[in-house]
Structures are given as C-alpha cells and as structure tokens.
Length: 196
Image (cartoon, rainbow, N blue to C red; front, side):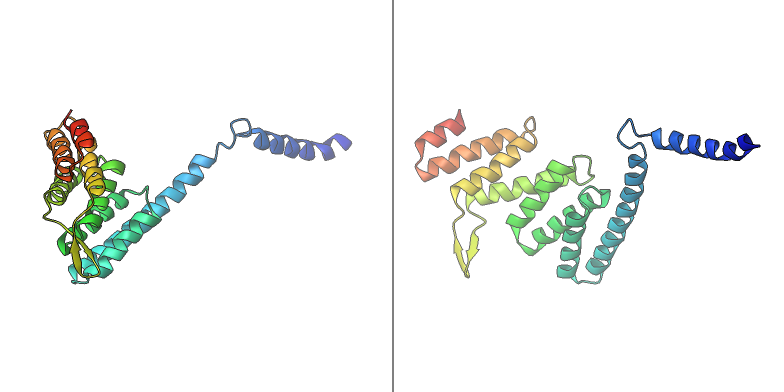
C-alpha cells in the first residue's frame, strides 16, 4: 500500500528531473525559440513602422516620413525593413539637398545591407555625392554662408567609395580624385601617396 502512495510522487519527481536536465547542458536550448518569436514580433513592428513612413511620404509629409524611416533603422537595425527604411531616408535627404547626411545613409545601406535591392543605387549615388564634394560643387552651409568642404572630409568620402567596391571602376576614379584633392591643397606628400 505504501508503494502505491509513493509511485505518483516518484514519477512526478523523475519527470521534473528529466525536464530540468533537458537543455541545461547546452546553456538554454529554448533560447533560440524565444528569440525567434521576439525577432518575428520585432520584424512585424518594423514592417508596420516602415508602412507608416511610406504613408507619410505618399501624403507629402516628407519630414515626418524621414523621421519615421530613421526610427525604423534605429529601433530595428536587424530587421529587413531597416535596409528599406535607411535607403528611403537617404533618398529623401538626397532630394532635399542634404547630401552629407544622404551620403551617410547610403553608407549604412552599403555596409550593413549588401543584399538590399537598393545596394547598387546607393553606391552610385554615394559616388556622385563624393565626386561633387571633391570638385567643389557641394559646399558646407554654415550659418547661411557657403564654405568649402575640408579636404579630410572629402578624402574620407572618396575612401568610402573606393573601399565599398574595390574592384569596380569607381575605385580607381575615387583614388585619383583623392590625389587631386590633396594636390590642390598643396600637400605633396598626401597627394603622391594617393596617386601611388
């Protein structure tokens, strides 16, 4: 009779031990499932926010669309919607003439989302902006006054263009432009190093 009373307790204890030991040796076997669920809900939220940004843009509320796109990229940097949002933000900045911020947005698309359908467009727009800065077409707007862009900043932009696609025809053009920038500055050492 006593054995019958302890049998359910024994079975229950064995079940608890078996469950406790499952996954304990690998550091949490259920974590991928939990993070997968979190990733799915994050992706859904990112997609919803991206759709909201597109609706703002379609309604002509460009600044609201831009801030919404920025929020998608900052809040959900690993969601697929982040690539789309960052490119859309860069495109809007480009249209508004804020080319330096557009350049940075395109750089994020290129470096963080190489599988994006906007990858090649981002590369070509970034190249155009960097060469415009190198030739003096783009100038800084400081307190309403147009000032020349520093050669260090132009060098950095052109270096990004070169490094993003080192085997493309844009790479030697960017490298040559770096040499020309420093040549115009009268810095022979940096100019020669760039040309070499």
